Length: 187
Length: 187
DNA sequence: ACTCTATGATACAATAATGTCTCATAAATA
DNA sequence: TATTTATGAGACATTATTGTATCATAGAGT
Image 1 (cartoon, each protein chain N blue to C red):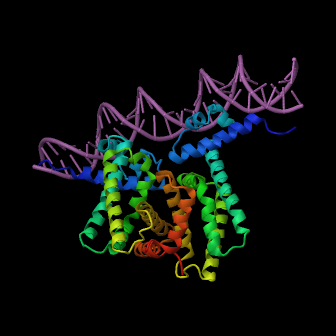
Image 2 (spheres, rainbow over the protein chains, first blue to last red):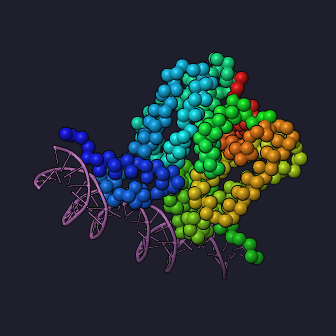
Image 3 (cartoon, rainbow over the protein chains, first blue to last red):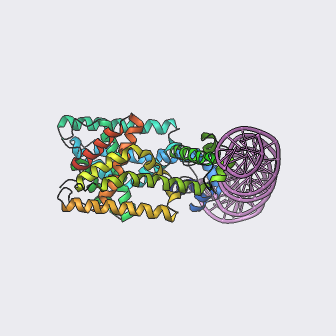
């Protein structure tokens, strides 16, 4: 007993999937569109989510936690900072759509404390990884850590863009991002 | 005779400025907000622009043309591809807000043929510049030109982000972008 | 098979934004 | 100064979206 009705979880998941897909393309997508795309009545959306804002915040949290979940095992392998960074790119690239989705709805998501908390946690961990790379001598100490964090974000975005617009594979996209991150585009 | 009333051009420019500033922060900004921020009545906005879509398209075109205008003199200097690229970064970075604005309203702007035409023109020129860099031996021939275009876009974004979020100067931001573009982050 | 419970469809109120129109007024032009 | 012209304020209709509520029904759980 006390377990969820199967219809509930199905509807909820369909709505979350549809939400990411539509809001990614158009941050102003309406709840009617999202419900329709999930093959679910609009009323059901309101049974699962209090409001549009809450739906978006749940989507943001889901996206962030998926990223965390994929990165966690990499951290446990105790690799060098550079190798860790490479593995993070490989792991994150397949869900770059979730990642980019976050950017597109950030002005709404950033109002939520839980979202901010998870996000800051991830930023902090990335920053300390970069610091470690500097100590290990694989990352240029003259570059601000905040700059490198920013560039990493951007290169993940680049990879995602190539996947979506030129059909590049996730593996290829992460390889490109890693190479460019460490070596730039020089011959 | 047949010259514009001074009030007209003032209102129009105030509306364009306010439009970029507000839509950059929030792509869903309303026309009331934009008019208010321009210290102009909402009716005046409708006298200058047919609709919200048209306002956004004019803003997009203005932003694109400002970029073109800043890049044009650089091209005439007949520098090496690498040096040209460096100068383009320096020239474009101060108006990176316009550039980022374009991204944030792209799903609306891309519906306009004129916008697309200017944009494609710029992309094409950038691509041929990169090809030239490959021939001159300063850019890695193994990397797809489309990838490099994408990375350049991303690094301009990185520079813009640092300017807005950490108070980095435009000169510093372009220097960082250029260094990272060509050399990556390695020590 | 029987009982709940989630669902879709639909109607509904509330709100907010877009777009049109008018009119007195203030500011530019000549 | 006289005349034209853009303006701000506001009323107004229209439309779209959000959010709530109801109800018969289909499909879960047992």
